[in-house]
Length: 78
Image (cartoon, rainbow, N blue to C red; front, side, top):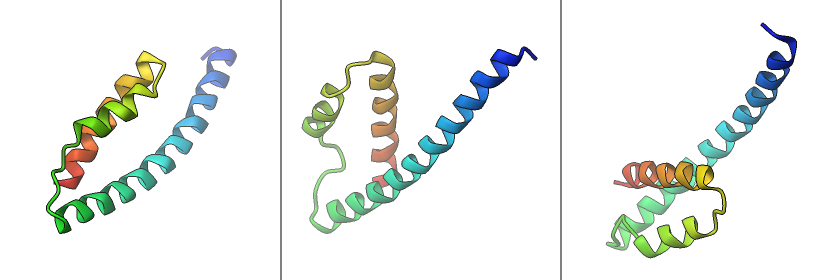
């Protein structure tokens, strides 16, 4: 494998590890949100909140990733 490609992949691996940790933390909080919503008879889906979160994203790739994160978070809450 080309030396430069190997270095780039190592950088990606480090970033992926950090993302994994943050996503695990996010999932735990998402489950707490789900419990709160159930306790207070609130809907899992909050389109206003989803639009608010996604509107802060300037990068289309990141916006797509967050849209998927939101989709999976709603699944986790149900």
